[in-house]
Length: 148
Image (cartoon, rainbow, N blue to C red):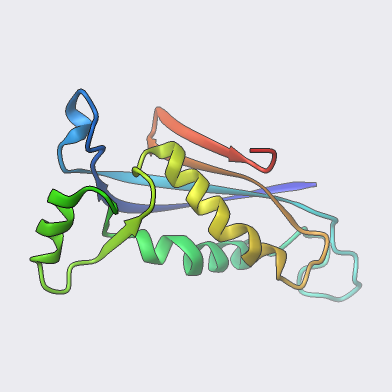
């Protein structure tokens, strides 16, 4: 059985070597979808009986690992020296420094790598993260799948 939880957050970024508009500082209303597979819990009387995982727990883990850190932050590539200098000049600015260019594809992979062990370490031993889908806009998204 598979389940999916969607969360949204706002963040800024830029693609430093992009040939068009994305090379400029800008932001998005991102959406993150987390898809998990697992057995349906059949423990009689349990709060999560009949579920793969309580959606509240799916949300809690995604917020702890990704959303709270990235929401209202600027996601910046470590080697984007001009932007790093600028952001460092802003006291207390919420900046997330990444080892990759913050494209939708790379952000989906980073999120997958952060979430995979977090879900694996839950009470449901048969739970597996299958997909992280990151929407950069309502019409554009990237999927990071377990087989990737």
